[in-house]
Image (cartoon, rainbow, N blue to C red; front, top):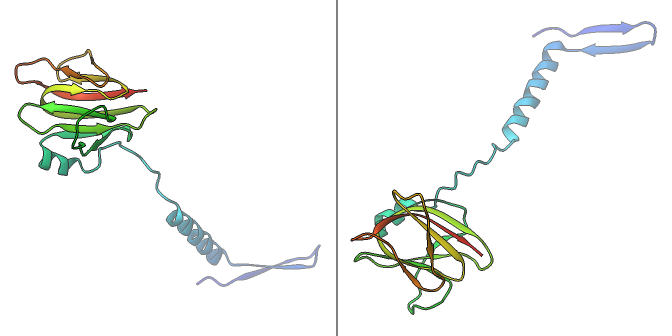
Length: 159
């Protein structure tokens, strides 16, 4: 350990003690503590939460979204109830909910889609291999082209 040295400032009569090694050690500790206390930046990748479980249980992928369009349990009585419904060939209907007055977007892979029913939003659906979106009728079933349906890849809802 280095010994402290004293500097006498003759003009002012001050005595200043410095510890070069200790000072740099304290400064290094402060920097380390500050770095450890800082939170890493949050980076949202918009991956759909629970996507692996949904794939295993329901047989389709929900990939990314804006957090406003969510997979929901379908109500037991169908109607104009604020749900976007996706009918698949010989599979249960999938329901999605977007809060009234908000927009929602969801990227997915739902195979064998035969119909989509809109809610009160303006809804557009994009199918695999298609560059043009299909307009989904409000509160009515819209047929999806294809003998056994098509793979739905995007739903976008706007107020």
